[in-house]
Amino acid sequence: MPPAAAAVVEVWAEPGDHQHQPTTQPLNPQAQWVVGGNVKFKGRLVVLPEDQKAHNLSANDAATVIYPGSQGDPWWDMNQLCKQVAEKAIPIFEATNPGCQGVFVFDCSLAHGAYAPNALHAQSMNLNPGGKQARLCDTFIPVDDPHIPEERRGQRQSMCFPINYHIPSLAGQPKGIEQVLSEGGIWQHYSRVRFASRLPMLQLKCKECAASAAAKEAEVRAANLAKQAENKGYFVDQEQCVREILGSTNNRTELPSKAKDCCWLQIMASQSDFQAERPLLQTIVEEAGHTCLFLPKFHCELNPIELLWAYVKSDYQRQSHTCQTWKESRALFEKSRRSCPLSTIRKFFRKIDRQHSAYALGLTGPAAQKAMKKYSSHRRIPKTALMDVSVIAG
Image 1 (tube, rainbow, N blue to C red):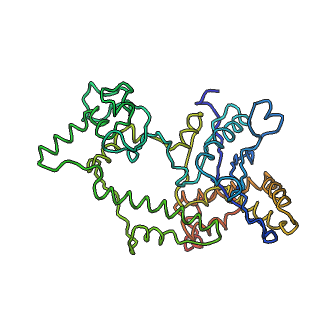
Image 2 (cartoon, rainbow, N blue to C red):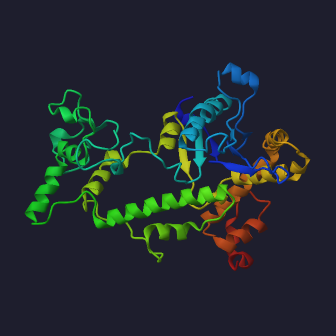
């Protein structure tokens, strides 16, 4: 079936959730992490054993269960997620939904937005050639920048010097921002403009961009610290952690510069080939012929798998008192994660559909919750809800 006529099927994914050991097992304080996916109308992303063999699949279940710890499995990371999507989720989806295009939906997280090590990312480059910087993939000189001479547009551009380069110390080394922009004529253009205006030469990073980069790095470090604390049973205020890392007691975070020519880093990042670069997870999904979407930040209530994990946790905890050993706990968890019936999974999706429709109507906060509760038997929130005083009043 050609792509234009292919049926579209939603596939929802979750980065991971965990079930702690029951309190009756003090000697095994491990956690069970499960990462999986759900198809809107078919439930869990699984395939029968005979179909697994027929399609030569590496697994019959897209979910991945790990038991992390100092003597257990490694903690979940981006490499494991990409491997799971590429080798399990996509092949199983294609085997169970032939001729269909999948829409893979993920939560918006730092891990999901990560780029490949060789992705066109200006922050991975130095101003000068060589040194400690990433080896980016080859690209083409943009054709849409008016500052690039016409004869250079569209030419293939390597981000590293050739092996036989006339300067031996730079042979095979990354070029750096100055060399890359010079090959397109962009460096010369902005240098002439600054000289004609009697302005100092541009820096690699202006003050605004440097402050923005520091804030982003602090957010990443704070998120990692909060995750480590949670794994040990503690709570860390992430916002306070960010302020302490930045050495500031106020809540104000400087915004990045609006200008695209404030520094060489911004000029490099604003080039169309760098702008078109996609996160690694999105690249894997789209290169397989499917669509990748990310939910808005801090809106996990739009992901139906959150409801599924709540169901699994409840089922597990309700029976955990029957387990006397770690082996029994693992067996119970494997049973619990498969226990949710398809009819219940579809109810979870209908609830999420109502949440989507509530936001689409402009309902937020208490009003959205009131509408969700009042129209719980509906597939969506009707427009008449906007005329309901009990809903609008919240």
